[in-house]
Image (cartoon, rainbow, N blue to C red; front, side, top):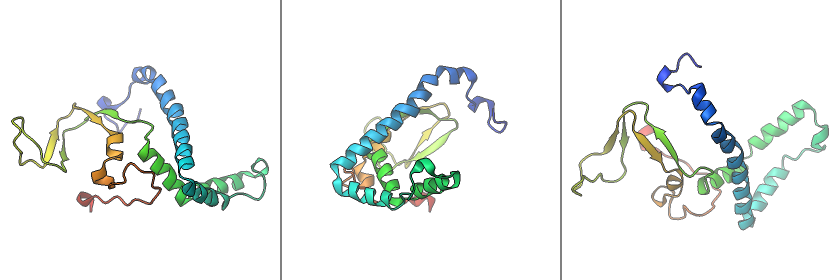
Length: 174
């Protein structure tokens, strides 16, 4: 409905109706699975569980939550949202066991995707290209789990639950 979005990029009412089950699944099953896997990962890593428990207890209100005023509830929510180790645990859980393993997207405009590895021609010779052209309308498979577990990016312990602050450095953005 946004006026600044071109008509060909808008989601129609028909598309929304056809995807209601997807929206419901994406909002409930993914959240419950993320929570389940996070709890399992913490159970497998008691030191992280203890550290997270200590951090959560540090913001525990003195009064029962049932008697807190609206501003106290908002303050508690803000305190929980600002907990750094909780943030690390959730991000690491989702990185290691993503609720959605892959996604299909369609390019809405022509683009050049830079490559990290050599591009091979059909005859198996190495091309001098450093990017791949993706024309508008191309269907692209985004392998979320593959990216999240890539040892060349995350390091040799990419498959381990680490709960550390990761700094993402993108040379092309700096």
